[in-house]
Image (cartoon, rainbow, N blue to C red; front, side):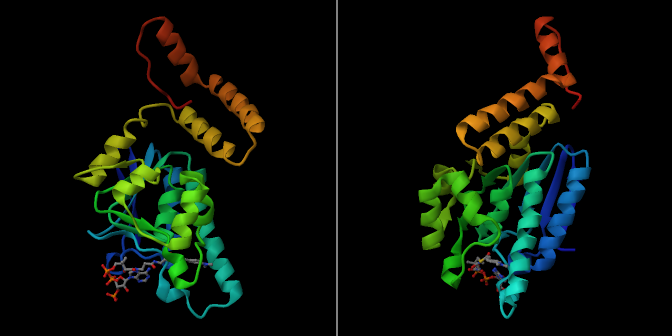
Length: 255
Ligand code: DAK
């Protein structure tokens, strides 16, 4: 297995474990990522942390050695495999945080972009270099990057294939934060800013924001009205509003 899923406190941790190839995404790894995400979805973890084994890379992208001499049908199936695997992050019931510990190129950056949040080590380097291979991003990059940093900046990254360093990535909004020191510890601390809240509200908030990106404003506002109304139906909301009024403590039950 080149993808490991472990549990640590309230976290599920997905590790790409193929450091000798800078965690490059073979088709087998893409399948394993999909299986690990199904397992994470079934677990009682409150957040998923995604990282790459080794000192150098989060993930150096699709396995270039595997991509050649494949039929058109096989290439199309490969793109769909990537979309299906990373799409599971959109539908994961818990938020996910990519811990970009080194290189995140091509499919590696696309994996990070599919996560809810991205943290980067100061030495991290990111880019979509597909254009340098005569290709274009195929695992969601042309769609998710403009949604995260805007179309002009996304087009610049995709058409030039240039490498963005961690600090610039933070300025672009490509990563939420650059963190010094132990990245896994920083990822846990970051996630603990939300893991103590109720899972239903966390999920509804994510859904409202991500679904809105595909909708005109008035439809997005209607959807927000529906989802925010739904939040009132949870026991968590009733309990916490009552506790506020009665000046007592309350605990989230995820219901
Ligand atoms: N694929 C396969 N092996 C890779 C790899 C990759 N992407 N990246 C690195 N490796 C391997 C190297 O071959 C080397 O293995 P050995 O030669 O030792 O056996 C080992 O990892 C260490 O790499 P380097 O020796 O190159 O390490 P350096 O520190 O010198 O350089 C680097 C690090 C990240 C700058 C360099 O390795 C590099 O440029 N890697 C390639 C980055 C890249 O171009 N990634 C792919 C982007 S394209 C699709 C459509 C599109 C796509 C996929 C599918 N469909 C329609 C199906 C496109 C996807 C992409 O991700």
